[in-house]
Length: 265
Image (cartoon, rainbow, N blue to C red; front, side, top):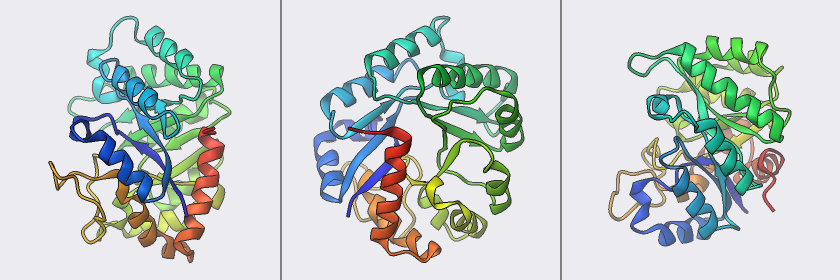
């Protein structure tokens, strides 16, 4: 039984001190591949180094996150294009729209997001999308932009079952994390059950989104409250019954979908 982590930040500082042990724990837990997502020009080199260090395990993603737009250089899109050229197995991520951040400028967010969608379309690759309290603007963008045929991944999806239905006409998948297991997230669990099987993926978003209490199968020694990416199988075991599946069935289903979206060798 193997799993694929569709979205994490394995290059972030909490993992740096013991990176090889973290990756070993992920492999031992049955994780065969993961997508490590950059968020700005400043951390793209770290994602690149990670992909070089673990070429059979880490699929790199380079993207400009809405939180980091103020730090972008005038050449950010050119730099992004260079990284994608250097890593043929790369995708774009994470990028998107966020109205929950302080003083959000949706005009600039949308401009940068659309530029990344267009780049993904021309290169035939997928995009990992961050969307927080911006489903209306995201739907407007999806309806008016030329979307990449390879599709979008709605990372750490937190929408309702009704939103799932509204999003289905677009070329996208829905990725779920331990967020869906939080007690207050009943509607999110219903959304998880509604997503068509071929559109479903799993992720940890590690080190973000600490695993729900009771399913922390792995702890980071230096930071025990940090979400360890090897927790993914434990999360899957709790999510699988929501779709009347065994854990190994959910693992096989989401691994096949991961191959379709990211096509690791």
